Length: 107
Length: 120
Image 1 (cartoon, rainbow over the protein chains, first blue to last red):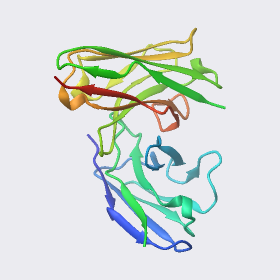
Image 2 (image 1 turned 90 degrees about the vertical axis):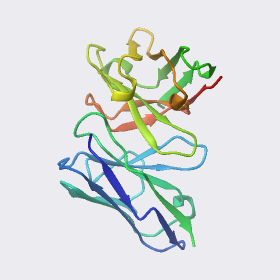
Image 3 (image 1 turned 180 degrees about the vertical axis):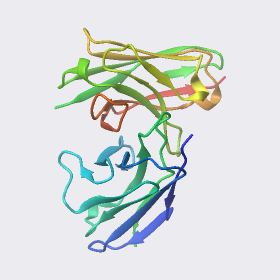
Image 4 (image 1 turned 30 degrees about the vertical axis):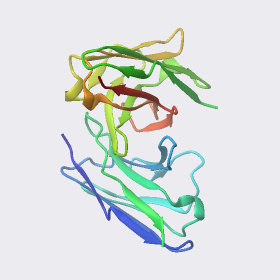
């Protein structure tokens, strides 16, 4: 099973600041990595797929980069609605494992 | 607009069974792989099972193999998860999710979830 490790566990930032979230993978997954956002009481929402492609309707302030085993999600300028938990997921092979999540909280 | 509506969750004793359903609308159901993802209370996400667009290929995470069965009825745009021999550790919110393409993932649309509680 491919293991995904997200860091930091919690990121405390203010609106307008830049957020940089990391996802490290136990083996190469090429570019088959996605990022999701989840707010309390809601289902996850796909933000980025295949490392750097924004999903439909996702604002341009969200961007993804990386390949192989190291990936980054960047939120260029945090909006109030961006404070949430973010998960990475690989689709290189089954099971489609997720990282443990990074909580972006208001400082 | 894509909509996924789960049903069938509830409280069941250890060793019991439940069948989850997910009614899909707003897209051509028969052309996308689908999956079930669960989230235990206060925990992260775990992929449980996936099924190809045609239904002829299925896949499971190790902890549910031999106990859970995924299936789909493309004529009814409905996804199912039959869960047998349920354990306390199966307690979770079960999400139905649509794959972004014909591959297993990622999942670009999710239902609101069906809560499964396994307890005596």
